[in-house]
Image (tube, rainbow, N blue to C red; front, side):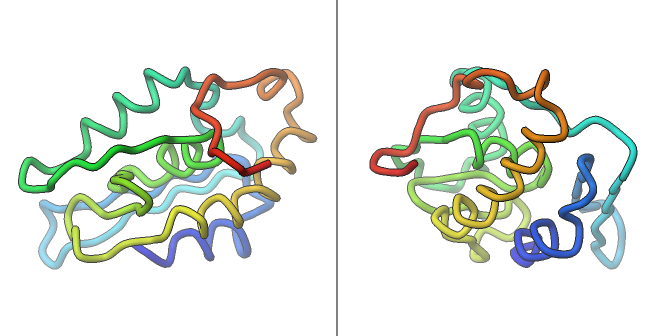
Length: 138
């Protein structure tokens, strides 16, 4: 849920593989969290088009779509949090669109996480993943 960023970047930062999915078919609704310490990271790299397509596929039809840019840190967040989508400057949850995470919080927290992953898996993160850089952001 919306607390995933803190959990991921603090308690699970030593796990390269982390995946959070929402079990909408379960009653009560639940999450499934998978974390592997001795595994490759989820997904990256993605092209800008692939990141935008992944994001667009998660946006519920009832949501008004805003112009959205997705950078490398945000792409990793989307690949790890399977029910999140970015719309404008915020991340929302497909099953609970009133809950949101500001994109600046994801970029800030995921910066050190992505740096750690680059050090541990240099071949995986060697070049630009192609995701849209955030304007004015390092």
